[in-house]
Structures are given as structure tokens and as C-alpha cells.
Length: 349
Image 1 (cartoon, rainbow, N blue to C red):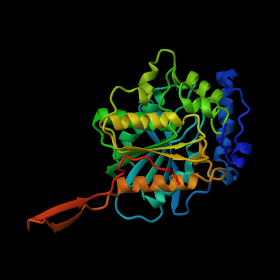
Image 2: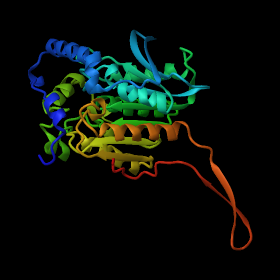
Image 3: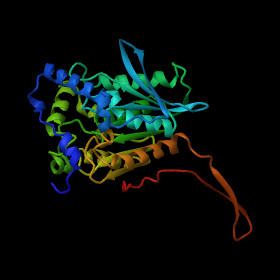
Image 4: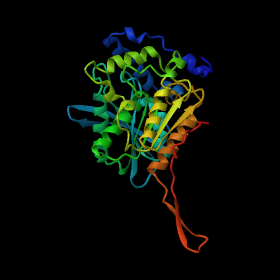
């Protein structure tokens, strides 16, 4: 299979479960065990310590017919209003918890800076798609109003997600576009953008099947449990949407050893075709889930720095610089420069 994943990742992230044979009840039991482990302090040797410049708290938000838990990251020192970054954890819509992304979310909060809110959205098999999308979008609409008094700037809002959370972030951005709710950036970290029958028909799936971080067995079970038979899977597959115009500037982060790599790459291609400012950064020797296990994969650190810089540039844009120059015919001209992604691929180095 070419280059090997980092040794620590191969030793720790081996998935021995045959997910496709598990009953719904067994999946729920596995989820509870996995999520307890991901929330445990002892696991932070793998998932990373939160940034000391951030305070983390949990609260609940009441939405029509349900109450969700929010994990909130805010900088300890800040003045004035702050951008909002709505974050969605990974786990194939069947496992996962907001706490697994404390390492990344706390650093975005402290160094962007921003209020970063991770949503404990509902999971399958009890709550299949599109219910998690409803949770994400309804939470976004409420938080833009700053109901908790966190000092959120409604003019600087972004979404971020990893893996299935990347799917969710992309779908929330698409729904916000339709509703006329402006977003200023989206960061999709090794997203799964295709939940149709072609989900595994990408070269990266065949090339990286068996790598740690994402087993094909778990991915298949996630699709079976989270996409009900009566749901048109194209409606929850961002890469299958007819139009991707009018979306915010986009950074997609992928790993060269990830089965889902081509999902992100193809989505960026479609975004660019639609005129959206989008780029993909591919990290060497990086597996699926690498940004949630910085203790195992060195590439997590440069990727995190790129994510923070991307969000900072779009949520705290520098004032446009204007200078006056004189043309060869003696007329004054104005030129301006502003930060931007440029839409080119990043090397990840």
C-alpha cells in the first residue's frame, strides 16, 4: 500500500470490529464505550491537551422538539465581539462526541480568536439523516442571535467539520445559502461528501482500504445506518448537489493515506467549477482522523496551523491597503490588496 502510516497510529487505531455484522443495539453500545474513551482525560495523550488560553464549558440549547448539548470554547482574554465557528465532530453519524476535538477547537478559539461551539448532534441509528443536518442548521440560526451573550459577531461566521462532521458542515453551509444566511468560511477536514451508492467508487478508497483511522467496514455500516432507504442520498451528499455556487471560501484538508481523500478533492473541483474560492491541502503520511489524534500523527500540527490561519484571515480580515502610484502619463492610480486564498492547492508542508 505504499507509504505506511505513522507507527503509533498503526498500533493504536487498529479497528478489529466487523461493523457490518453489528445490530443497532450493539452499535449503540459500542458508541457509548468509544465516546467514554474519547472524553477521558487519560486519552489526551492521543487526542491532545486543550489550549490553556481557552476556557471550555458545556451548556444546552433548546430547539423544536429536542435539547442538544453544546461544548463551547472561548478565549480567556478577548475584547469586543468575536467570530463564531460552529464545529461538528466526526464518527460516521453513528459515533463521536464534541470532546474529541478539544485540541483543535480550543486552539482556534484562542488563536483565531473566536467562539468555537461544537454541537452534540443526534446520531444514527436512532436519528438518521437528515436529522443531524437539522440539528446543525437550527443551532446555527439560534447562535447567530447570540442567545447566551457570548459576544458573537453575526458578520463573521464559519462552519467546520471533520469526516462525517465535514459532510454536516458542508450541508449546513448549503442550507444557509438557500436561506440567505451569510457564512464567511467553511473548513472541511477529510470530509465524506458522497453518501450515495458511489461512495466507495473513488481511487483513494481502493488505494487506502485497510489503513488505520477509517475502516471500510465502519464506513459501510455508517452509510447503512445513517441513510434510510426512503431518503434520496444525493440530498445529503454535497458533491452531488446540482449547484455549488454562492458558497463561502473553502479549505478542504485531506491526508494522502485516507480512503476518503478523493471525496474532498472532488468536492473542491466542483466548488471551483461553480466559481467558489476553494483549495485543498493534502498532508503526507496523514490518515483519516489525523487532526483528532495529534499524539499519533505529526501532520496534525501543520494542518492545525493552516486551519487557524485560514479562519483568521477570513473572520478577521485586514483593512484594505490603499496606496497611490503615478502612472507613466502622470495620472494618479489607486491599487488595493486584500488577503485571500487564491484557490491554489496547498502542499501541507
